[in-house]
View 1 (tube, rainbow, N blue to C red):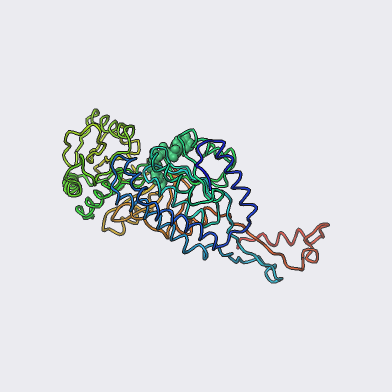
View 2: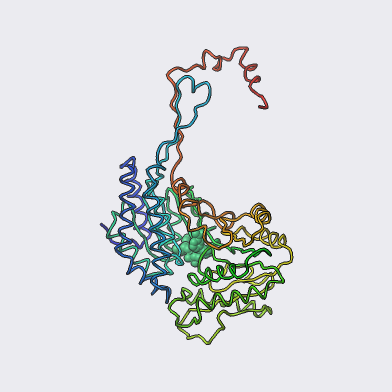
Length: 478
Ligand code: NAD
């Protein structure tokens, strides 16, 4: 067992050793894959309390029960799903050999082979889940892995490193800790696959670095996920579900509702419902232990900066519950709802990723759809309404990583369906069998028949007079 890694040299050496061990070991049995995943599960069970306490300390306020639900139980769900399904996923898949070789006894199949070592960079907002959920599928596919937790949650990162150093052979799973310098160096290593969860801007840099070594990437990025509230929607139910989402992790979630499109004549009714629902969850904010704080003063200044700038531009801002003076050290904030700010304001351009949200009134739903399509493709899209035809139109005329209808964020909780972005919100996916495939090499194998008929069919040089005519006869439209 090893000490933790925190230098570029240590990282490069560990990667080289993992890659060598991978080649030496050859095939990775289902039992071995399950045992590795089980070791991560056992680690989480053993360390769940100190991990939840570390997340609470890193955020400056994050309920232990919430951290268990979001990061520990969420990761366990991915790990158990992968453990229990990997044997079925990893079976060779027979494929149809082409005619007439199939008649001659040719065989073909696709092998799902591990790629080698997968590098996984996580975020602070879900500091365990963004590491361990991809790890579940990387291990299911037979890979080894090196994890890089976010330096913004340093206590959690250190504990993750120590727990893995205690429970794992670093030739199987290792953890490297450090700041942005280490993170950049991480993306420049010759991994066999790289998973990056983080912002769209950093994602571009990650992809540039990975390109130097032709490392395939899974980019789990963010964006401004929109909600469309249709005229047929149950307003109170929608407001209540949006309030619950905004109250989750202080709004610091990649698929959190960011822009909410509301029919113009229902704007005030929606705001009233939202206020009631949000204040029901959090009657007070300061010192309320149920409220997740904004993770640090830089992120607080970022969100407050968007709000201040919107206010300076004359935007109306509602505080839910009513804002009270805050204690200087407390980073818990009420939900601030910005109504119809100028299009060029920062809050309309940047992902909010915190306890704020924009509400935009619309006259025709097609205007909302056009506005969404004029923006970078979001990670999630939400539609509330009872009009099936309109729902289909919205789905068919927009593109987003995933969708939840008549609620928000729920699709991400599915284990048996891919999760990932599109366009500016990312590429690639994990969760479910698609996660296993993402971290596997799909290797086609063709086993030739004993008899090679090409000579007798006149398909080999020197070409006879019938060769060209035979080829031309095959150029058909059906
Ligand atoms: P971030 O991009 O600042 O950092 C993410 C990780 O990248 C950290 O571990 C950090 O150390 C590392 N990093 C920072 N600069 C780097 C660089 N130049 N090169 C390589 N790595 C670097 O993001 P964040 O603030 O930790 O997280 C918030 C963002 O992540 C939001 O945009 C959110 O939407 C997104 N997110 C996406 C998902 C998803 O599943 N799609 C999940 C959670 C968060």
